[in-house]
Image 1: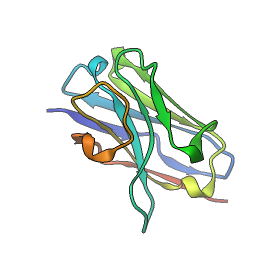
Image 2: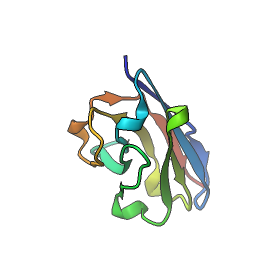
Image 3: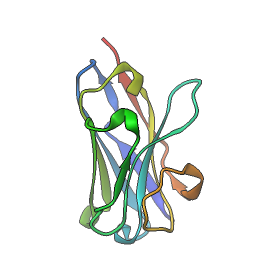
Image 4: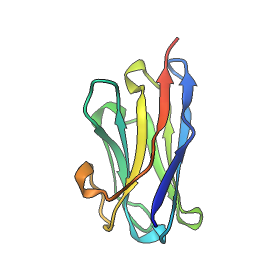
Length: 125
């Protein structure tokens, strides 16, 4: 059974950093893309970033996080990371990682078959 598990969330002050990790068990991660999504209270789920299969040379960032967030993957560890720097209060949300049976990068949530339970990110002073 494919199961993503997120970790690394927490509370930081504006301008701070967090690194989220997503360990995906149940299949060989090399062949599949992985996406990060977030959902804040009262808002729709938003695609934050994704990384393609293999070496992850293709990726996507939503406009609001470009230059501040970096996605990467370590296939040997079946893990994808989201480094979040210069965090802003509007980045606060529950962050989810997800994967599916495809290798290309996509920000379209319904394509993803397997979702983690999420990790809370709080940004406040």
